[in-house]
Length: 178
Image (cartoon, rainbow, N blue to C red; front, side, top):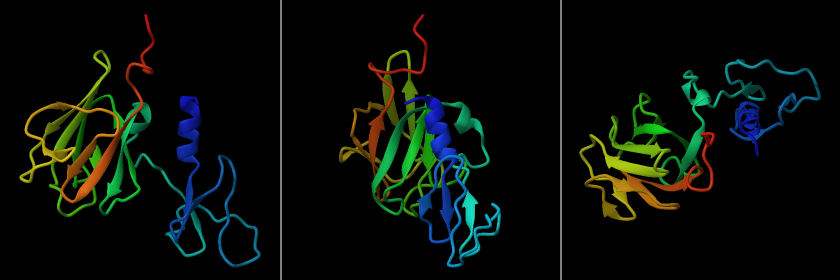
């Protein structure tokens, strides 16, 4: 699939007040219990029965410019089922919204509990201890120094467990071969 497909599929998501997702790219989605077919404008304040276009990139367009190189997927904790995009270079993980990956778990330190990096020249994902007081773990072992991650390794921060899913590596890279 192309990068364009991924961007369009993210941008085209809509949600109703109940939090369900639906809709296809370019399709108007109307919810509610009336027979009216008039589309509801985005930004309706989240009224029940309305739809709102979601910007998955937040207010920072940097994520749109930096292609995804992998994901962390929450399999245990308050963000259960959520996925977090990893970009090339350093990614900070913590509870505060200033982090690249925000974990909504009160047991996770606010600032840089862990840093995660993808280095394209070596095709390696490296995780390192951050500034948090409580230990983070990789596959159940305390993270005390830098460690290279392998596909489906488990990263535990606070009471949240994340599974690492790489996209880039030996088989694929966003960089063009010279």
